[in-house]
Figure (tube, rainbow, N blue to C red):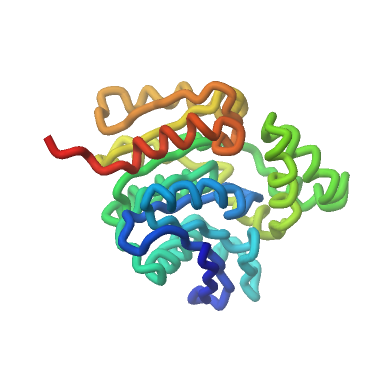
Amino acid sequence: MEHHTITASDGTKLCFDLAGPQSGAGVLLCHGLCAGGAQFAADAEWLAEQGYRVLVPDLRGHGRSGMPDRVTAQAFSPQRLRADLVDMLDRAGLDRVHWVGNSLGGILGLGMAAKAPRRLASLTIFGTALALNLPSIGGLVTLLDTIPGRALAAQITAHMTTDSRTSRPLVARMLKQYDARAAAAIVGHIRRYDLREAARNWTGPGLILVGSKDHAVNRALLPQLTVLDGRPNWRIEHLPGGGHCANLDASVAWRRAILTAVAPPVAG
């Protein structure tokens, strides 16, 4: 795995990893809120072995990436986060990628499909609703650092996130690394959004992976899938046993689905 660091236009340090041959088709694996690129480390190596060039970012305020000098709402808008990812892709020399996004990573992927579709060879999302309308919870994110405290909150959330005992320590480590100010600012943007039209208007290959145990997201997502009726480019696949981070607890089925999504079509 190659480790890279770049500087965003606002001076923020951004970190990402690359794996696989430079000649391989590009794949981007984007984590969700309060997680990090470490979520996909094993998957990146596996895809690299299949011949893909894989980019795994740490979003600003997450993992090894830094924070801007001024923490403002605009510094963590979806537009800013997408711009960071485009900078990483450009530095890696990846013009088009198969975008695989979990939760926030899926939201950013749908945004890219609407705003910069030429950069996407395909779009796969999981743990991502097409629209949300939630109350303001940004203050709760920062409160968790005090009550019950980051370490205990990380352990509790890891148990709630995945049934995989081997994956819980990884989830807990990621939950200890994010900056609560970044998470609160991002929540302010994504607690209310509607990307159903972005999904409907995407004409490239699309895949939505539905983890059977991702109950909170599924309550919103499943009724929304009707907007994709009649869209033959979209495929819906259910992952039995998959939680919010389905790559960690339904990894075999998840990898099989991803490989199908990113594999080039066979000439007839």
